[in-house]
Amino acid sequence: MENIENIENEECLDEILQVRRDKLKTLADNEQNPYEITTFAVTNYTVDILNNFEKMENCEVCIAGRIMFRREMGKASFMDISDTTGKIQIYVRINAVGEEVYRSLNLWDIGDIAGVKGTVFKTQRGEISVKATEITLLSKSLLPLPEKFHGLKDTDLRYRQRYLDLIVNPNVRDTFQKRSLIIREIRRFLDNKGFLEVETPIMQTIPGGASARPFITHHNTLNLDLYMRVAPELYLKRLIIGGFDKVYEIGRNFRNEGISIRHNPEFTMLELYQAYNDYNGMMDITEELIRTAAQNVLGYTLVKYGDIEIDFGKPFEKIPMKEAVQKYSDINFDEVIDIQQARALCKKHHIEYEERHLLGDILNLFFEKYVEDKLIQPTFITDYPVEISPLAKRKMQNPNLTERFELFIAGREHANAFSELNDPIDQRKRFEAQVSLKKAGDDEAHELDEDFLTALEYGMPPTGGLGIGIDRLVMLLTNSPSIRDVLLFPTMKPKVKERY
Image (cartoon, rainbow, N blue to C red; front, side, top):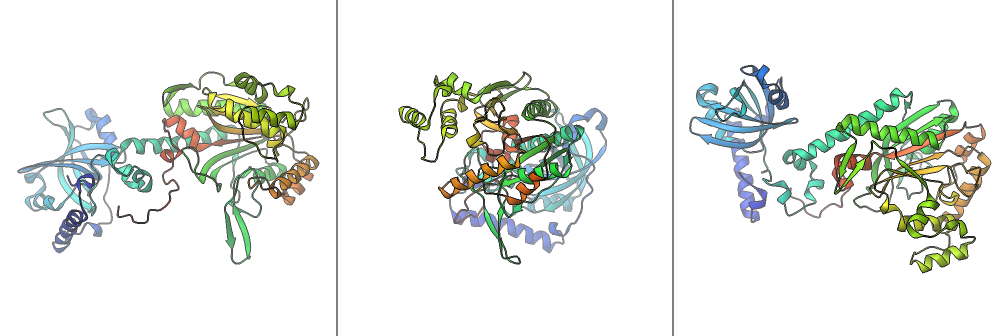
């Protein structure tokens, strides 16, 4: 097999590429140009044949896929064909397909796409196979496939050229099939609960709904700067005000921030809102939704992630942020009475803070340092400070805190939810505070959205809202260590020169 890993120099590579092009020319000269073929009637996939051999033995099938292996034995040949469901062996005899077709197999290569018509049988070694009666070259591969994909020197190649990853690594294909099933299960779950799926603008005049730095674009006709949405929240709340009691959206958000194993500049979020509910109701929905997705897609709720096991079958733990900080740092923030005392604690514990940070911000800094990575099993952290929750309703018992939670699993945040702030006067004050933060240099602070405030003044019912990161949930349920493993085309910095 030609193998990119074993190609030592450009000259050798050029020779291999030329050989494949010469083969294509010979095929075309003999009126066998595979690119001229427009259709092939596939009747079966390999998984159907392999799983139902007893019923399909001696039956005629038509399959198509990529040639991943070839072995010639005189007047007979074996090849492996890989389709979207798996791989199966093909047995080709000269007297079954004809001498002309059989001889033309010398012009075929690993990576070519073929269509096969034949009968299902089992070899003497017990391998389920298809005995070809007709075989057709449907597309010519002009580049050699890597033989051992994970041995490639350029580890980024998997992400840069996902098509190669999918061709050679069946586990990757399985991950993205599971991703599709997880999203389908989420939709089914919400649809069955009476939620309406909607679409809101991706380009917005004001970036709102989350503390994040936006991407900026420009509309030429309107001569108007627009922002790629950081969250759909404020538009979904407008729909609640308009009379839809239950809405959700699954779609892309865009944040002009760093790239890591947890973050990609564009990512997929689920956001939902339910009138006449609160953050306690959102906890119930979150727990049931994730447990249902795990059970229905994977078939179990005890999920292995790296070296740990996560139990989605048990009730999720709930703990207020202050209690969590005290549990892991032994610091009681109920006894921290002013900003000077909070800053002194930061210096003592080597936590960096900014002059703009208030008590609630500093509490969150302690949470991030001492607590976040300790939360392995599903845990709801509740009662966030108002300073970092500009869209959440205050707790009646303590107006410095809000009715908000975040769900942490495996040391990472996976969901964020509020009892939504529906007081337009309080919301304006919080927006104005965010504007002050932005002027002080906080690029992630909210901007003031006058139209949203106008909508609130018409009256929004008590509402619970929830956001779940789809990519991180898929990472959990597919045991994927990096967000790039669950995005078909993650954001990558282009290489100056890419031949493959």
